[in-house]
Image 1 (cartoon, rainbow, N blue to C red):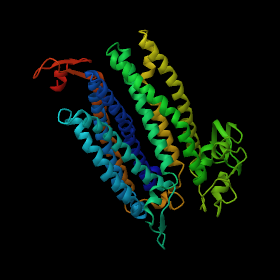
Image 2: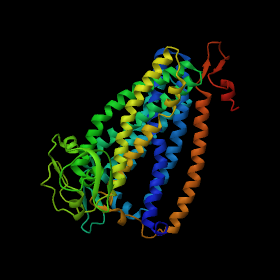
Image 3: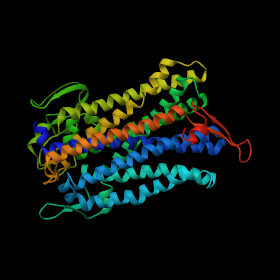
Image 4: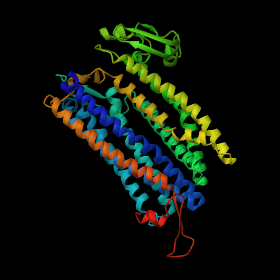
Length: 484
């Protein structure tokens, strides 16, 4: 029963719960927002009512996802001032700027242009509407930038100084704090992963239509769009992931060592599969000798500190090539879960490549009129792959940072509120589970219902004041607009 009486453990669990739920919707809104803009770009060029229907289709899914994402994000910010009051005192001077910028420069931008997308189709010019679609997506990507700047500062703090008593970090250089060593690499790596998820979701919807033998136009179009974006973003992930890994190697040696179960000082192997026993300090794995050292520095013989050395605490890493941290007070993260999450992410990336090859074959067959039901059924489950990869990546980033909430500056143990008790946290966790379940079910009903109905085409060529309504799904456009 220790867990249920430990305010620190419960606070961590509660925040993890809210983050996981929030991050169901953020990747989808950013990933699918791009396809809303691409659909409108296609319509702007073709003036085909089918492409116009596709824009409205993705806009509805994007909006529903955006709303839940905003609502679930607010609870996370509230928890900073309740469960994590000491953390808020410590980072308040740093976090105020990016969070304010996210609200003023990104959220309002996204909301304003989303309003035009939803209600301005016949009130603005086609070019203005097209720009609004792209600005809506740009606003969501910009919002992610400011949030990731704040998160990255916790990973690689910069542009600050501590008060003499060490109770608070005070910003001294805004741009140094914003462009801290991991900001750009983390942002590019994260956003690319969100676009991969969007691409796999679009392919899944297209595959479902083709599997059902309905709406061949949108089925083929969605699979084509998803496949093109998927190929580009999956290829881009290689250099972007390498960029991120190099930052970890230079600034977070404990996380890097945990990712590969590296216990003794020396060249770091690249594990393919394995298991870590933290109690004995042993790692059993199939690995490439010096492979991780090569990826981090371009040299198989580069020496990195092991977990045994790091746990004891070091005053300097000057003897280790590529490691920028000037001091480290000791402490290592939960090693096996960091190791497993990291290698699961790598395996899922390999599966994405295979999935794209299968999707290419399925699309080719569909264009030839030779629909493979089994292959298309497989494609419908595709979004699970990047979704699990994203969640695994965040587990590596956040669990691998432990025992620090601000790396090398503030321990997680010292960041919690001194007055919030375990029973109070248990009550809020229970309420969150109930409320989030209701939100998730509601979101699924709307999104799955929208997908089942399909893009609704409105033919306005029948004359002024008269519309010939057509629906690709099971309802007519008039029934959908009338709420039936």
